[in-house]
Image (cartoon, rainbow, N blue to C red):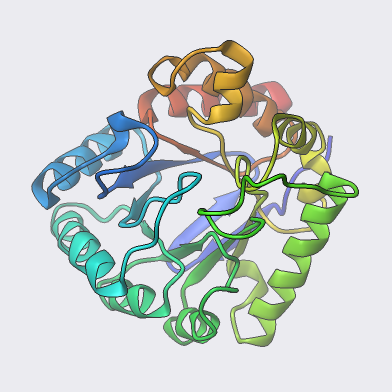
Length: 280
């Protein structure tokens, strides 16, 4: 079995191959695909985030714009108004590292000024030419994800020559862009973008071939939680995909994933702790 880099850092946080990190999903949006992850007020989001920390989250990923298939974009101002009160509230109550899920440099800059550790950019620095320099100047970490098109268009007949090879080459090229912009290599995390511009077969191929991405030397994050490919396999709505999420995260960890991004932190933490012992 091939594992990702044994140790990397991002801001004040270390990633080790012998402990899987659990990232809790905290959506400050009214339209994320899983209703159970939505927080429609800052107070509720802060309460939910602190609950995730108590359940074992290593990092919280805060998003102010839905990236579900077909989602319409929102303005930077709207996104900032949604996420900054949550970042500030969590910072006052906990020292857990925080990631902000955004493709906009202005949003990233505002969040980084509040002490955010990572920027989780689903466009891999493509949508905003200022994003790479904002992250580099702040000394923050970057999560780079593969996606075809935009959330609005990504599921329109996605095609690949070899999805595992194509995704790996794309992510390595984006990591090179990040490094050239001044983001240290040991602060870069790769995400194959399960569900973002992929069919069911593409998603399954990426999971089976995840170790090929992990041998690149970068830590790999996977976001599988309650996604539609699990619904396609099980024929159940998002509210009934927890067991499928656990199974898929176990496979990802056995193939070398370093971080799992989940809605259900308690179950994710237990999954990670068992799966990492199985792979050792």
